[in-house]
Length: 383
Image 1 (cartoon, rainbow, N blue to C red):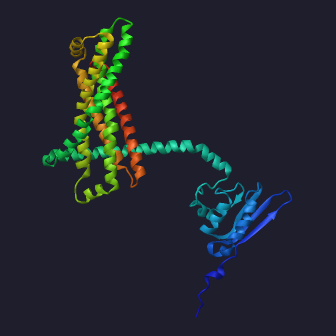
Image 2 (cartoon, rainbow, N blue to C red):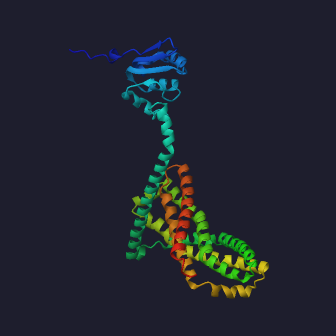
């Protein structure tokens, strides 16, 4: 009967040969099987011998005669090399894969190749950021398409409308934000009135402060200030809420029981902000005009009656509709961006914080871009 071959019989003893030349150069050749079984108790001895030559400036490493190499042997050499490949290294491509799983082992070239990779890192990061932005844009477009399908389904089945969710979100994003919006709007109105009044005083045109405050407050300041504050206040709250639900797997539970969370959670928030944002924009504009009126009275002597009577005359009605339209668009943008980043939260707390921060930054940036588009499209309307 044939005898089963012994697995240890084919084991090649690991060898370490060091050749020195007359010009103080050394060649370290490794032979045999540098594996856990092959090294055994020789690890400490080989480590001491290799460390003595590791820092030498003229050392050439030859691994072409190595029969087998596993994680133990690769880790031993990697630590001796200082966790980077030496400049003079001869290694078969089949052995490189053992170093790829070690920290920094992805780089397989010499020092010059590593320097080139460092120079290309900004270009690589720029490309990765651009591709990541395209991927997020694709996901956001998919989310918008899903919301449109959900809205069509609600139109066909009115009994499914999430009325309570919409009213609750309107209360949180609109009614509860009126205090901070009033404070900021009032202060901005005061500051703008003082700055504009000081410039108009030089030309004896103090009365035109009503025109500037009226058009700027109704058309720009009110909708934009309200959008920025709501993005930082309610947008971050929406992202954190959806992110926590993602962490607790509540969204998966809703899907399992047959409840479409995009219709119940996301669409309700989009509708609520689209309804509440124009209203809080008008509220902010009114308080900004109130602050500007009080400041204009004390700094320029403009009467309250003149101010209140002049605003309807100098501000065309088209500016009010533009402000309302901006509010609707800004509300939809804030809600979609906040929900998008909330759904992208990964199962860890660090991702939740990063997603909330990114949500606020992207929402405010998108609002500013949309406001610039409105300014270009309607530059001859209401002026």
